[in-house]
Amino acid sequence: DMLYVPTFLSYSIWFRMIFLNPSYFLTSITLLLCPSMQVNFVACQLFALMMAVWFRIYLHPSKTSPFIRHVVATLLGFYLALFCFGWYSLHFLVQSGLSYSVMVFAGLEHMHKYCFIVTLGYLLLCQITRVYVFDYGMYSADFTGPMMVITQKITSLAFEIHDGKTSIKVSLKRVRMPSLLEYLSYNCNFMGILAGPTCSYNDYMAFIEGTCYQPRHQENANGKENGKYKQSEPSPKNDVIAKLCTCAISLAIYLSLCQLLPVEHSIDDDFVSSTPFHLQVIYLYLAMLALRPKYYFVWTLADAINNAAGFGFNGYNKDGSPRWDLISNLRILDIEFATSFKMFLDNWNIQTALWLKRVCYERCHINPMAATFLLSALWHGVYPGYYLTFLTGIAMTMAARAVRHNIRPYFLVSDSYKRIYHVITWAWTQVAISYTVAPFVLLAVGPSLKFYRFVCLTE
Image 1 (cartoon, rainbow, N blue to C red):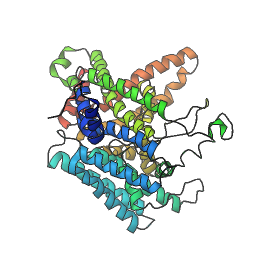
Image 2: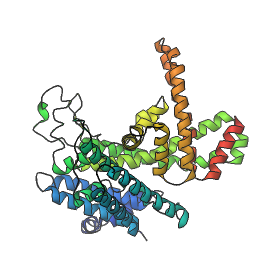
Image 3: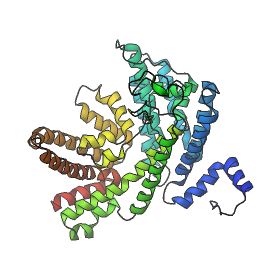
Image 4: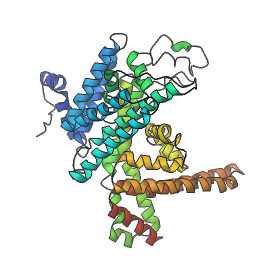
């Protein structure tokens, strides 16, 4: 029952549709442009992009107080959550409320641990009931997706508060206990409620209070103190436009190829029996290559929304151009041309990797790599394919380290050998990633084990 907008509508009707019912308008446009995507999610993100521009211009820190900015960002976030997920969005408040209570009443020494257990536990409970109890996990919008980002924010904040007040290191930034409004604004603001990315609490507060540009004017400004950029606030316009173009290209590629190259075809009996092994490997790589633009679209759009609101400034490049990659979640070229398993992972879902490093890898004293992969699997959800992927990821990481340590030195003797090494490691990395991630896409035990069996039998 969605409304398709004809091109001959008068300006008065356009005005009423855009300003009185923008979500309805954006839903209609989204249906026209990408019917195979989750319509509500894309419509809400496009609406958030418009609100981000409005937020930066009309609620600039120089024009209004941090209190107003917190209130508006939070209310808009709740509106988008309700529109996209309905009453399931109440889980966002319950999760945040439980964790805030722990932060308030638990002792500082163990507050971060209790908060981590409660927040991640509630996320897992919602994921289990959504997938296995009510059995609609694959047929509805995943309301646990935003909860995954909220989990990152809550636990990051708890660890930051604990570390800042218990560590003797002067270099650590002190994080004060936020008020309830600041806490909800950080977790549920409209820029990041649907797709994140996660960010540091101090960075978010600097954005709200308008101090995010001040300490960075002295960084990377061609060696000049404050440089020539002191007088004007950097504009995100060029970066937002570039990221929106990336979104458009990614969406076009995904919609063009996702139906032509389904991953499930790689375990089709006829395909496996009639296709040589090297062509199966090529098909698997192409199928994964066709799937990645979906994530490029979602994460780049989320980054553009934050930038459009004025959040994400990260100093200046050597040529004086502003950098807006403080909370960027991926580097596409470094992913597609990665020459090692680590390089691929370091440039994919960057903010999640940093979160895993802060809350697990740097703190776990017993096999931190395995613990980090296990936490990543738990955080992603309860589908068996996730656990098969991350268990395989442990083996792949260990193998990659061994190869780099033992074989790489033989290729460092000349530039031509180095180029050969890069080509070989690029091909190996893409095949290894495709093999590792296949169960993540297939989700269920049966298809995943069938995939492993076919690969082993074919080899």
